Length: 187
Image 1 (cartoon, one colour):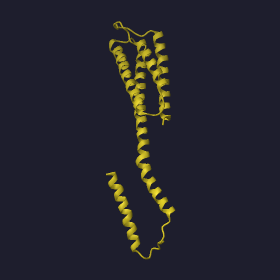
Image 2 (tube, rainbow, N blue to C red):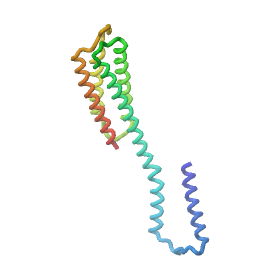
Image 3 (cartoon, one colour):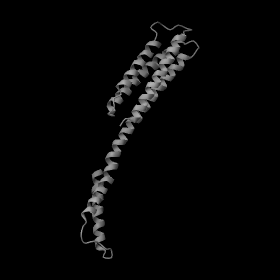
Image 4 (tube, one colour):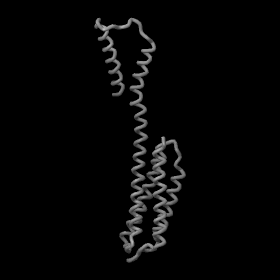
């Protein structure tokens, strides 16, 4: 389809040139100026090349960044939900604990997806330090909140665990936000 459009535009230009030649009242130069012809060819080339090739590449990079940005924002939202459940002073029932555990599982898988997307996005910038930091903080967060014993009625996280969780939440939020910032600057 694209080649058909190019061919059609070239034919249209030739037809317009022939039609102009048939009108005698239009003054035309009998000689061809090579500089003007070269300028015309370069202008037409750039008019076709820039939207077709460069814009497509830039749009692809923008789409990748938007997708990764959306996934990181979803991860941050999951972390906020976990934080609000843990920081709640009311006793955590088995359902709420299972919700925290499930949110931790979902956020872990969301992280794997984010890291895979970053790996295949080919931004030309290394994000290894940020990825390592986020993985470490997420593992530490999970280890802090997941309890090996069965959760009993009236259970709640201790004040120390709540404080550590709040610190980890803030560090995870900061690190993922910096990752977003670095991705937005990537080529």
